[in-house]
Image (tube, rainbow, N blue to C red; front, top):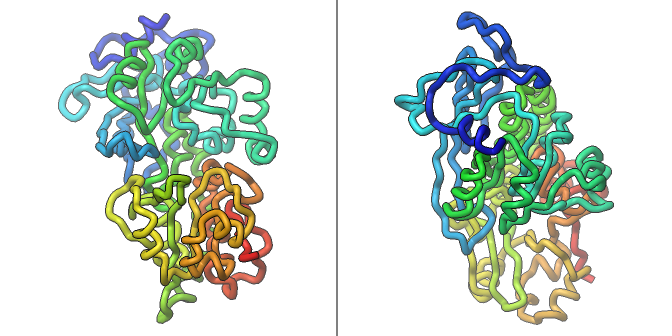
Amino acid sequence: MLLAVGLAACGTAGPPPRAAPDRPGCVTDFSAEQDYFPHRVRAEYAQGWQVRYERSYKVLKTTVQAAGGHAEAGSREIDSTYVLLRCGAPRPELTGELAGATVIEVPVNTMVDGGSVLYAALEKLGRADALTGSAEPFIGDVEAPYLPRIAERIKAGKVAEIGYEVNYEALADADPDFYTNYAGDDQTFSKIEELGIPVVYYFPYTETPLGAAEQIKFLSLFFDAEQRAQQVFDPIEERYTKLRARIDAYVAGKEKPKVLIGAVGESGTVTTRQRERFEPQLIRAAGAEPVPDLPGGGIAALSLERFLDAGADADHWMDLVFFPKHRTGADYIAADDRLARLPALKSGRTFHRVGARGSDYFLNGALEADLILRDLVHLLHPDLLRSGDDLQFVKRVPAE
């Protein structure tokens, strides 16, 4: 079976694959004149992918920084081309721009989310049933109400934990139609492809908020679920755009607040985000200036001294900690008195990314761009919106 999948994924043209009778959506009587994709999407904000439609296949191109969320992996870009072929249709000649492209028959039935970032998109597409594996569950009792079908599937033991250090045996048993990830090395990805499993490179966290929200369009390409994706995305875009207009009008002619971005490790080393990452782009969309403002789309390490200097005149601090252990600014300072140099900490203008919805910040937060932007506006411009008590994806850290 894996050999058959491997042959299906290789970059050679051939006769039309025979459609499995129990697989819905496959072509049984191919016509070169028919358009098999009546519903189409395009990347309007995302920079990391683009798609072109032909009558019986889609040409998807992606660009990701392969280091993704791992600073130690070293940043490098991977450009990939995929032919998403309607199952049962003949393969196009893989020449010219399609030379070396990975062929994946659509609609797919199963996938493994090796980066654990696409749960929310699957949930909102109504395709939670397709998830057969992920890097880690990433969902507990706090997050479950926001991802009910994914949570139920994980609880029922139907989602294999593949791990970030890939368990190849578990991945083979999960038998996905494709595996998606953003971080790792060539050896890891090569081993996955040797199993006959196509690797799809994708990462939403080097996009603007609306670009990240377009993850639902991206994923829909594999399920032929473009119509559903557009129905989800359009109201998000509308609400986000209206809020952005209000923000722009509010900050016009004013000095924008500065937001320090970073997490202080136990060793004193600070990790921050470079300019093209999600958090700096979110802060700019919210009418503020992120500091430090470093070029790139990855994670950067700073000395504590440099971080404190950058935050000396910052109005707010966005602590990027994954597992908050300090409840107040006083707790931070008691743990490390050097942090008293941060006015944002002493004035109660610090916040972190684990709010009422827990780690859902990293899931629905990157999809519901309008809601996460509202959270930032409540914090940075409290006079703009009436209530600031309904924070969902972030949480205030009071001074005392």
